[in-house]
Image 1 (cartoon, one colour):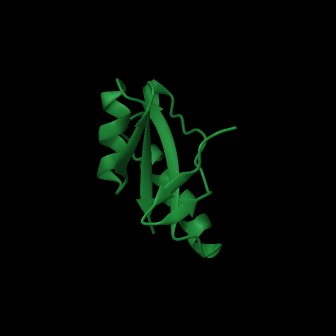
Image 2: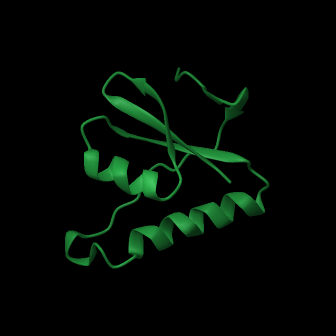
Image 3: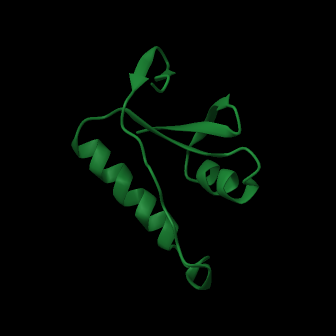
Length: 86
C-alpha cells in the first residue's frame, strides 16, 4: 500500500498521474495548458491541493512543474513528490 501524501497537515488525495507532450510540440504552451485544465478541474471539485511524482533525476520535468507553482515536498526512493496548492 502506498504511503499517503500529507501536506500542511492535510492528506492530499488528488493526483496527476501523467502528462506528456510530443517532443516536436514542446515549448508551445501545451503542457502549461494541460496543467491549467487539471488545476481548473480540481478547483471545481473544491480540492485545495493535488500532487504528482517524477524521478529525482528528471531535472526538466522538475523545473517545468516548479514554474507552474508546484513545490517539491518529499523524496520517496527515486521519486520526488511535488504538491500544488490551488
